[in-house]
Image (cartoon, rainbow, N blue to C red; front, side, top):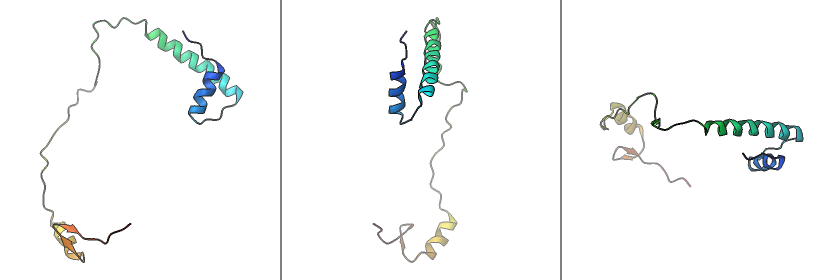
Length: 95
């Protein structure tokens, strides 16, 4: 197993744009070592014959037809606009 040293933690902190004190670096070094040790233990599990789990809730997408409905409110809004065409309000160019 790879041992995490202070320089590794400093590099991770620099990549993350985090300023750490020496005490924080030592604490994180210990925490990262523990996490990597736990992950190493997971490598020992026998997963032969275990199907990958892609989704655990058995939910499925419910699809519906995408139908355009004409809104009575749209006609009223278009009447209020100074200019409109093809059910769209014309506005001045803004740059």
